[in-house]
Length: 303
Image (cartoon, rainbow, N blue to C red; front, top):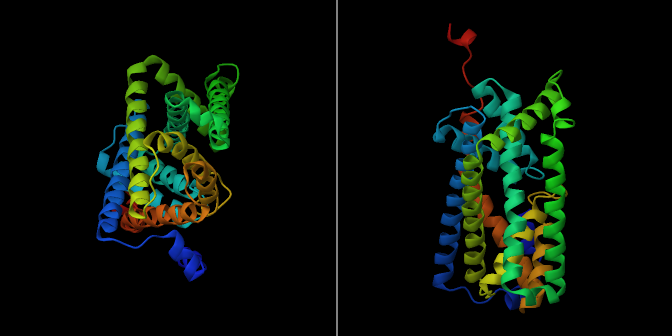
């Protein structure tokens, strides 16, 4: 699909938007790939932190393998939901508790959605002039809307009269109840939440660094505050369950948010496709754990 999209550009049009390739462009792409791998490691560490808070003491190597396998599936199937399902399945089999595995993935995901809007709001606070543009207004409303939705969901999940009333009568209710217990556990250990949020910020910083490196490889120059303000909203948009790998949604978001920074729509589209390409290459590392990590021996098989 990526090759089809790239070859669909008229040659003259693509040459105008993609500047002459230079030797340093490859260095920028390698740096982007390294930053993406670092982000994968931090994401696995974030997930491990959640698992340990929920009482599941696992090795980083095992969690990292599950995460890479999930990335592989999530980037080659519609949306990232397929990868999360795989992670829940693999983790649940390991700890023999799929409800707790589900809760760990949900809470780990929530921290990302919590951190991204705050990063945007801080950047807009540093440069209030950005809010005068259409992109700035959309980013501000998107950040506030995301935070409001998250606060409502978290309050409902951990409230004793709402989430607390759910009992584990079946697999679905047991999973929701596990999320409720997991969120409540963080109220008892606030230091763990601070640690989790710090890892989440570092994870997003690595991803934003990768985007900036990719942009530099194709000659796009935008101020650092602009990147920090708008890229988190692109990250939120691209994981919406409406496209394969975020194709189309990510590019449209980049066109919207970078349009006011003298970046043409064509350059934004090329940037979006390049981000997708780097993510795909990094996600290929999950092919091995996806293939060899799907079947574990049971006591019946070993006797």
